[in-house]
Every structure is written in C-alpha cells, then in structure tokens.
Image (cartoon, rainbow, N blue to C red; front, side):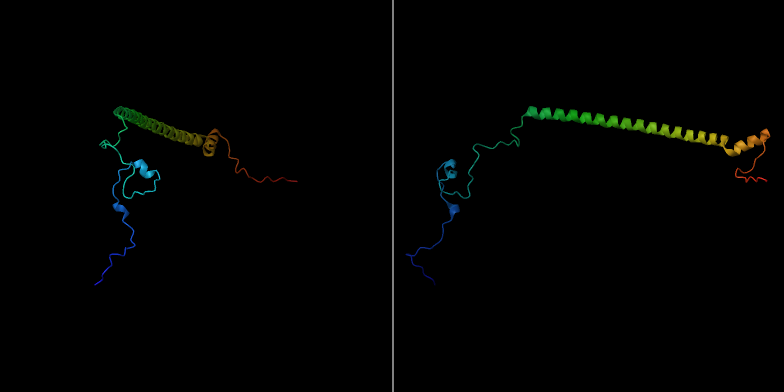
Length: 143
C-alpha cells in the first residue's frame, strides 16, 4: 500500500476547462487582460434566434425575383420555339434546294446527251456528211 504525505503538493496543472464563471463582460475577456477562456464562446448572440433561415430577405424581394424568373423563363421558351420554327424553315429550304439540284442534274444530263459526240455524229450522218475517221490520222506527203 502506498501512503502519501499530506505536506507534499503534486506538480499537476489545474484543469482549465473547469474554470469558474466570472461575471466579466465579453469585451474584457478578449481585450488582452491575460486571462484565457477555454470552452466558451466569446461572441454569443443575444436574444432568441429567429426561425427564418434568411431573415434579411424581404417578401417583396422574393415576389419580384419570382416574377423576374418567370419573365426570363417565358423569354427562353419563346426563343426555343422561334429557333425550332427557324429550323423547320431551313430544312424546308434545304429540301427545295436538293430537289432543284436533282432537276438541274437531270436537265444537264439530257442536254449533254443532246449535244454529245454520239448524237452529233448521228445527226451528221442523217444530213449526209461522211465520217472523217480518227482525228489523229497521219498525213503522208509525197515528194
């Protein structure tokens, strides 16, 4: 069994968390008086807390914000519908262009067939012309 002498003091620091409450103002605690406060809030709110999460937002601001958001939403929807209508017009113009291009290609093919060499040779034969043969014919000159 270990017995301690009542005359000897332990070298143990006191627990600072269990300080007695002092009736000093919070400004005196933080003003550098040298006394440290542990486990206590320095800036406590006075009065009851309001239950409104945003107490600084006024109802007229919320209503105005809702109206503005509604107007912006309507403008956005109008823009979307106008864009879709413009897309339909572009697609219709593209269809018309492709159809005109096909007609032009068909007419061009018909024209080329009409003025092509085979057609010209046939018409020339009907008119009584004779075929001159290949254009790269060798010409012989006698001396």
